[in-house]
Image (tube, rainbow, N blue to C red; front, top):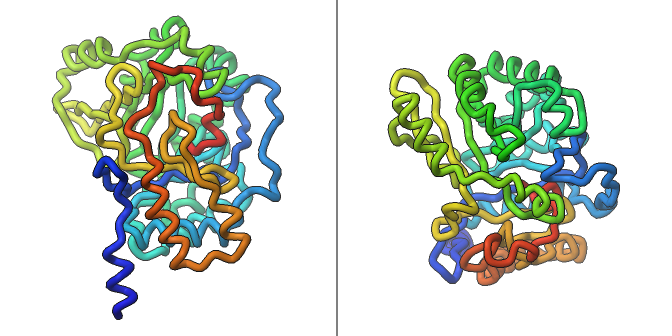
Length: 335
């Protein structure tokens, strides 16, 4: 009993008083799309499969986080549905005591045929990346003509009862900013929630895409007036600031890491596909967990390592001040 009480007293709090309750885990760094702002065309420098965290290792890490007060977990990538037997992993993680919310980020190309298995495995929510509703533009942005597969996956997920079903749209000047209203109307029609995201200078591709950066502030104001939106709150634990439609269940979120960063309330850390714990999306502060696991660290010592690692979490990212500082691909870091 004394040991249990001791464990419950430990919490993940960084040196700035922020309580960490949310982990984003990249289960694979490979992706079946090549969005120009995320992964370079022809990129092949992926992590060796022998360096991937195994399902057993992932379960140990997430169990330790859950024991320390983390209640939310998001499975990311790359494209997480490309990881073999992902629903099996999801079922193991959703069964962990203390983990109250298990979600998945996906491009939905492979979603249609895995929806039922994910639902049965205990995945609570889905976030789907969708930057355009135009097939030709989709192919230009992603390097792949798979819009029909994405829309079919969304339809199947809605039928399966996933709610809220969130659409993530990276808004880019001169690329897809003319589709803001059509995307809102699409989400209104289908009962999806929508989140607009500013481009970030993550890696060379992200920095190149910064020329298409668009401040979401004016867009938020325009949509608020056009649709009569009012402030709202949508569960999820992420950084989006939401407005809601008065007459429907539509929520529109705005993720603004550049124009209005949310570092002061950051509640999350990320784990890469090879088991590196990153304390900030835009900084290199990190700790390698995989070697510790394979050297035989105990569960108790693992928890102590995680508690101590929170001291590495920086106060904020420096995307604006030092845009070249982070050279990691988003797919490696964990979304």
